[in-house]
Image (cartoon, rainbow over all chains, first blue to last red; front, side):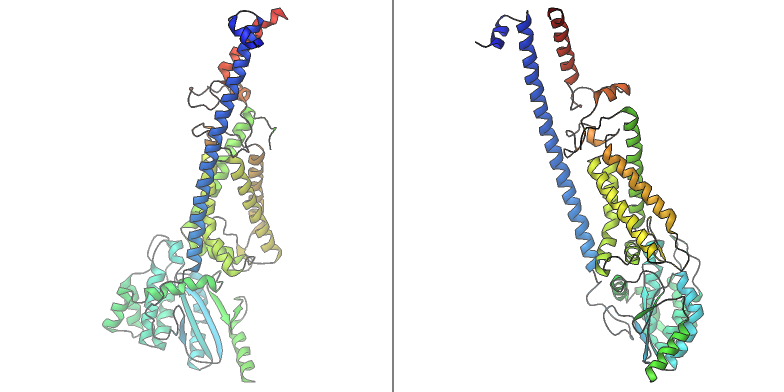
Length: 261
Length: 209
């Protein structure tokens, strides 16, 4: 018979009885600690599973978004040569590529300065101008005006090179001040600006209204990050990023000269 | 990572910092999540990661910030969350410092926006100081993760601490004048009674020694 059992037999009086009580309490405490530990383990498993699920969802989404190239087989406007490609004007020896968003104020500024000169160079056969109409500002501004204008630009390309370039400049000329949550222009505005530069008829208004080239606009939007466009406008001169602090006209002249040698 | 005992002021400081850092992350994630393409542009503008990796990070980062902010808001696995948040803020500090050192002209894109900006419009110093202070907040929480209103200590599902959390200090509780939770909600429930019983026994023993 152990001390403890003796103590228990004697009841709760005396020193040994207290010892017994202490031991029982110690056992209780150990059991409590064990239960706590089990609870903690369960809780940790719950956290780990939750973290795992969230991580998989985030990684899965980002992977999908980064590899999304838009619809695989979209209707393309005339002057667009490949799925997701920009609208191509002229066939001059020097390549100029513009990445713009119709709602971007800096693009408006760029076009006011360079638009007419670039158009003239297209006409003179000096440059091949490729315009990629982006639509990321729709997300920033909470509207769909960039998409609508980019689609209309595609519709304008069906009407002809000259008309499309004029339409593109007209949209920029009418670009309102950025107003988040508000559309920058209506479908009727876009159709009317087309009329101003000589694009008429039901084909035009249907194309603008029905967003015939919405799939292509999505493709162009998806191609932006692959091209590493971190601001608009971004200009590439013969496939090299051109810093807009420089003189674009002079740089094109130089490229032309190099081409002619 | 134990040995730090909680004290009442520390609990409150940790609570404020935890909720503050949660707010920062929820705000920055929320501002970016509605404009994912801009978020990608912001990451790519740093020109640190390869284009395609930057694209992936740009899409993932806002959601990651939201998830981390939510964990801190709820006080789930506070220490681990704080370690991750501190690492994230440190990465931002390195990124911004690197952009500055390389003479890039970009918007940090910390709370939405981002991307290249015209020469002279970049403003790096306030961003660096801000991110450093966020990193310091996270560091405090790594050392003192115990805080009020946290799931970690709520006892709802045990003490959700991934085994990295200091034991609760009852004396700090009492010093703070906090009422005990009703039995059944508190993982430590019963300890006080037990302590009192032991104390009684020892008191009775005393005269005999």
